[in-house]
Image (cartoon, rainbow, N blue to C red; front, side):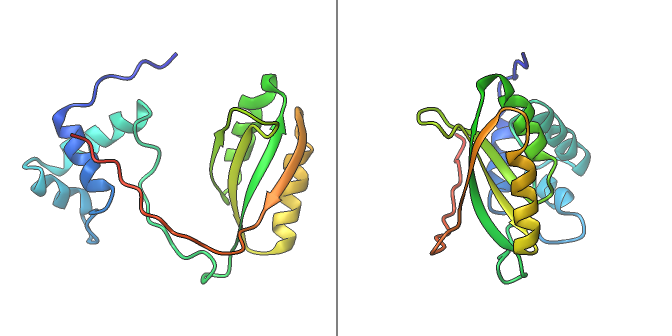
Length: 156
């Protein structure tokens, strides 16, 4: 079991900045260091710790995947509880699986979003995932309308 250490005040300030103010420049972590009155090495060291401890999953940007020619869908899986970790790990291996999460209640207990370059690629991945050991059912839920929200967690 991974026991996470408590966030420091510095960590909280860093995470607050990362959520919406990552500088677009050749050395963004050096710029963050300036804003936080430290250096780039310290910022990178803390980010490595935060990632290793599970506070941070990834740092990246959001693109309008549709305008870039990709198709997106939400996938719901019904998975035997004993196979859940293995199925989640297998889903994570697909470059187009942006994230997955376990949901309690109801039959569908593992959900993930999938971006692919074509319908054929999407269908291939869905067949492969549906054939994984422990997967009972799979359902693709394509959005009819896109709503984009910006969620930021302000850490005190």
